[in-house]
Image (cartoon, rainbow, N blue to C red):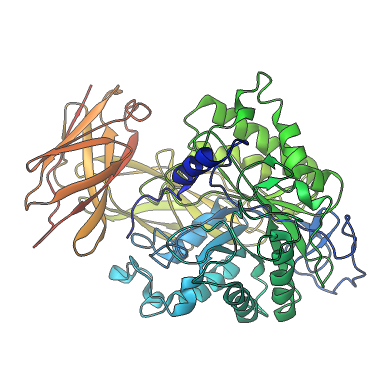
Length: 612
């Protein structure tokens, strides 16, 4: 069911606090340990440089010391996002209840990310079918009737066509939740290994899939180097990693850390202290990448955030738990998950410090720590995402924090590669409008390498992306004026100047009064539930607060809401802003989401918005 996901971090952290006296690890993501079979430093195996003229990042990747290299031995860097959902009871990446998967992938690419980490559970091997997949109006048309693994095939193929890499992440044994160990009574180790091998075989010959993250967030009682075959995660990772490489020796094997080593605890999957003494040994050299997860206070409070020297203390914390592997040239390190709501000042400082620690691309090129941000999805309850709750617009503040560590062209220090931006789009025209949509078209831009897509801006907000020269903006407020511009983007990540602006006014009458308007969008509906997004827009003056009211026309019942405080009395509902989204400048918008139940019919309510 498509609704906000908590990822069990808070509940699991509470359990950890109740049962241990060491630093409590929040339910955070796994660390990937990489080392070669015979020692601590991973040396490059003799390789011949293929006679190719392909783009940087092409083909399968391998390792040399702390660096990742592409098929032609050019340094590369993973700089991507987590797009979750396959591991949940939806059995498909979230957001496809409201958007087309191709549009989603194009937008990831347009923002300068080069990889997608796709979490999944072993349930997918039971022939599961996607739930909450919207195929109306032409959306996701080629996914209709496919099972979950077949949908994964389509997403991999589309990501590859867009120039993105994919890392498959065995996130959970089943859709019910995270497990401390890599096996459960229902999903034994033999099943886990068999499914990993099956995926390695399934995508053999498709270098879009560069590797597999063996298991998400191992934690106590999982140990590292203790020698117990039932508990030693390092030994299990070797068994599984070698099975993956037997099926496809060109894949990278991502190994996360555990929780506790020699009495010292860190985030779940984030403790790689044991890899110094007990490195992961794989049969195929130059395929191991260590992975960690690291989070801020929106996930859990930790002692290092209270250190008087914070954030200057954080590099030492990271060095001790996982950064030493990179610093000592042992193996590449990939921060497979990190994220925050950015609401607390300490979280903002933490993210800024972590981005600097991972080494800005402009200064260090691909000789840097790789990463995938948690998450692309907005419905991760303790972090939020790159997308806003409408699943279309971008949280530009979060995205801006990551700019320095993105990797356009996977360039070397100083950038390198193509730096010529496309020409600005011309002829931007409004081709039609309704009460909730505006249709646009423009003349194609030119570029020395070729234009890969266009970013469409509604005011200063990214409304969406297009691969061609048309776009329809939806979910708008009736009787409201909007201004649009378009920018072109090429394969190297260069972005053009903006087109000349064009204005459009939607038809009909808006739902609003006293300084703001409110617009309703039904995202998804099933029996007996639904979820929706409400967009609140300030009209002629800045707001300090806002309130949206409506009366359900057919007995609907509110069950939950996010980004607003919502209460229902009989059929009447009132939703008010939270502390962080009440202030709006004229013409700017915010959104809140809700979930409810219905019976018989589910017509949209008439909204009334009042601002102070």
